[in-house]
Image (spheres, rainbow, N blue to C red):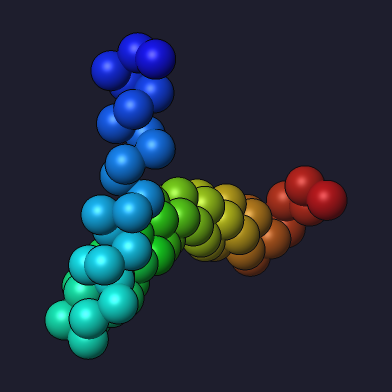
Length: 72
């Protein structure tokens, strides 16, 4: 049995005892929330850029329509 295989079989037993305590559960929840926030920040960064690009395009089309230029 390799060292990596033995480490992967022992790790869940060690974490099981850690997560059975209230502070361990609180830590697991905080880490899960941090992961959700991190993924959300990345998604919002992309969404913010898309909304900004859409606002510029629609604004440009609106200005062009004021001058009688119909693009659509």
